[in-house]
Amino acid sequence: MSHVRAGGSSLELANAIEALIRERGGECAFPVNIGVNEVAAHYTPSKTDDIRFRTGDVVKIDVGAHVDGYPADTAATVEVDTKNFSALITAAQDALRVCIEMIAPGTTVSALGGATSRTIRAAGFKPVENLTGHSMEKFNLHAGLSIPNIETRDKAVLTEGMVVAIEPFSTTGVGKVDGSKRGSIYRIVRERRAPAEVTGLFEGIKRSFGPFPFAGRWCDALDPDAGQHLSKMVRMGMVMSYPVLTEVGRGVVAQAEHSVIVTKDRCTVLT
Ligand code: MN
Ligand code: MN
Image 1 (cartoon, rainbow, N blue to C red):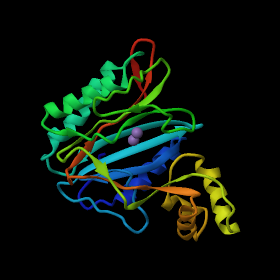
Image 2: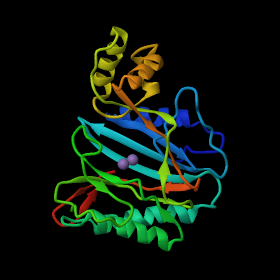
Image 3: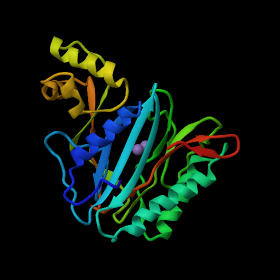
């Protein structure tokens, strides 16, 4: 967070964070997401569409690391040199803290959503209703359980030993994200018969990143023509690309996130 400053490059920041994860003996569980202002999620810099931070930007950094396939996922928000959105950022942090205090075996995901929504609305903002936290398992970043940011009818409960990422999003906008613009984050979908050079890159991706999401820019080390082959794999349905998710009302978005493990009577924060 301390490296986010006006004029700084999001590509350099992403590279530095990812290098740090690898230096410390982890692997990236997904490319570092750097979402500026109304960009809520799923943006990682590519080699060519690098962004430079500007004074007043609200920057979300969302980081995932795994060790032997066990992932952890965490995020925080910082504003570049100004304090116009401190209350928005604090609202997401407060919602996260309230959720962490509530978590124990038997806590319903809907109760967490309700608490998130109430905390963020009490601060005068909206929760993002179509982004959620998620359970995690070995080699699985989204292991089936969703933790909403609003109250729902979902009766699912947390149980001892579950690992979940809790990630409230607050916004000055309408409280919804969508996106159709292809980003630079990808994931393997299925194997298909393809030209040898495409299959070669597919195998390299599987070997290097397993089932976890990966960045287009990571593939250059595997194949100098990776960009071209990647586009082909997306067209063939071998790989999916995540669209960049932007706030529908073009509101500014803040995010806070921790991964926790549910213990016998509460939870322990892992990140
Ligand atoms: Mn995250
Ligand atoms: Mn997450």
